[in-house]
Image 1 (cartoon, rainbow, N blue to C red):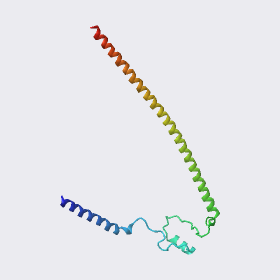
Image 2: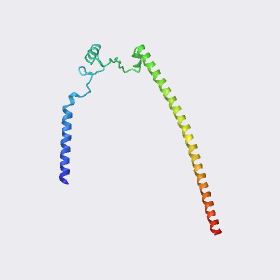
Image 3: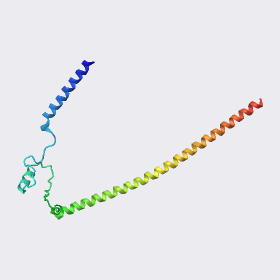
Image 4: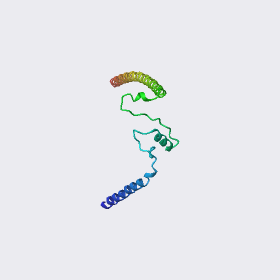
Length: 155
């Protein structure tokens, strides 16, 4: 028994070690490759450096417009008016979609409560019918027992 446990532990250690070695060997072919490898990311990046990094990136990656970072509270106002309009229209669309989804949720909740109420009513009706059935069966049994008693008395 101890031999099996020791052998299992050794095999497990070898397998885990092999997985670590293979993971380290395959690290170069990982799917994630940083976009800005050639130029380090800093806050004081110049326009020439931006163009150079944009040229060095893969052609399939969409260009991201640079956002200026300032220490003032008016950082949002530095974007172009067209970008603000696009962002505002996107926010309006998201708000509209959110309102529609909330209205749909309210509708679903109302339908659920209606169905739940119907279920409760049906459940109560079922209980009442089961009670009536039991009472009727008891009456039939009592009548059968009285019939038997009468027959016995007649003999």
